[in-house]
Length: 345
Image (cartoon, rainbow, N blue to C red):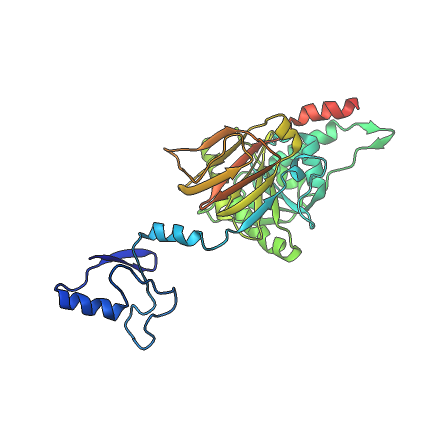
């Protein structure tokens, strides 16, 4: 008879002494009975008077993964609620204390009216190295195309609060343009400027109780840069920090292990806009969804196996329960079409 003994996160096979007498004595000492196996509680010794080094270990008949899955049924999953409509409708604001806006070193593809509203409602505004060049272009472009309405000039954009990075991309003209803006040099080459910017912003976010970061992101760029941005979602995951990548027509963020409820704007449901779940980096062994057109039920997701792309919605509320990190991405409104429709009313 072999049993599996867990040591931390590893398993090893335990073989009792041979011979009927020795096996019987061994089973009596360890608290086992014929026909059943006794599992001692985690953190409590079955024999309080013993000082054997395995006192606080326990026995099971499953592998480590199997035991963890068994434990998952006894511990309620952590719950998360998401309202992406706040990013892609008239509110354009996240959280009671506002959000952080970050401009990366990519062309800004988000429609100008969305950028301006998110920028206006932000509590902190940051450009990352070469992102300051793109923000300068945006500011200058808006000034050149400025129109008046009833004799009143369009409101000026709020100034940048900080520029971060190793400054190998920012131009001298941009440095001069933002000469009064504080700059934080982050020379570490073991992390991207985006990742380092989140680290710089974290103390301010904690102090001001800001949880959400909105990043103007170009999803049509180089694959390595896109993957680096997704990697930052993984590296910045904390209970008090949610990072959203916003491109011209999509919103992307990380779903951590637990149960997620996503309130989808009704327009996206009726127009059957796309959404996707991607197990980037490692497999997810147990994923269940409701509210999608093609739902998953205790599915295993991994690259080389199953992924969920080009999905859509059956209801306004989507639930995703997962035992591993997943990337959620969803098509947003057709911003320019929305502007045209608003102008006609």
